[in-house]
Every structure is written in C-alpha cells, then in structure tokens.
Image (tube, rainbow, N blue to C red; front, side, top):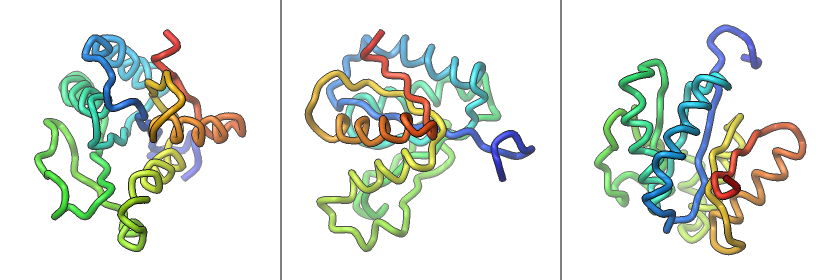
Length: 158
C-alpha cells in the first residue's frame, strides 16, 4: 500500500549509542509520543543492544497503554536461540529476518540496521560522536533522508 492509503503503517526505528545516559529517558518519551501524535507513526522497530535500545523499548512499553493502536517489534540480529528472548512489556514479538541467516555473524548487526532503516519512514536517534555502529547507521540513514525517504530526529542535537 502507498502512504496515505487506509491500512498504511508509518514506521519508526531507533539508532543510538549503547552508553546513552538514563537522563535521556524523558526526552525520548516525549519524542516517541510526538511521532505518534504529529506524524501518525504506528509501528516501531527496536534493537536489543545497549542502553538507548533498552530505553526505547521501555518508553514504548509505557506508552502502549495510552496508545494501544501502536505496535513495536524487537529486531534480532542473531537467530532467536542465540538471543536472550525475554520480550519487553508491550512488545508484539521478536523478529529475526531470514535474510540474516546467510550473513556472516560479524556483519549481522550492520545489515539488520540497514534493513530497519530501509523499512522506516522516521528515525529517532541519539548520535553525538563519530564512532561505532550507531554513527554508521545514522550516516546511512542521512543518505535516505537526503533523498526524501526518511525523517530523522537526533536527540543529541537538542
């Protein structure tokens, strides 16, 4: 379905440094709520690594009670039997894209990150330094944003 048609999902992903400070939580919560109310986002994709992902999952679990129409999925870079599988409260399910089974384990996270960015209309980021996977994902997402395919809100800029 195309954007604007009945039944269309508006997707949002997250990208951020694994050492994101806990004090970011209120700003992250406000931004997620803004995406729901202002942009009509109704589906979220969350990773499983680091504090930013943990906070995003926690925010979504908390907000889901207020906005029961939203869905969020925990995205897995490795087969479920290799991952710790307790889902965050409110999470629909864990998703392991079958395409990743053919990817070397070392490349699984970057490939998953690109897949999620490609499937998203919006991204909420916390990227403030030029290093690690969060920055590489943000850099890739910026290319999509420059082509009008994605809108990124980087909380590190606030």
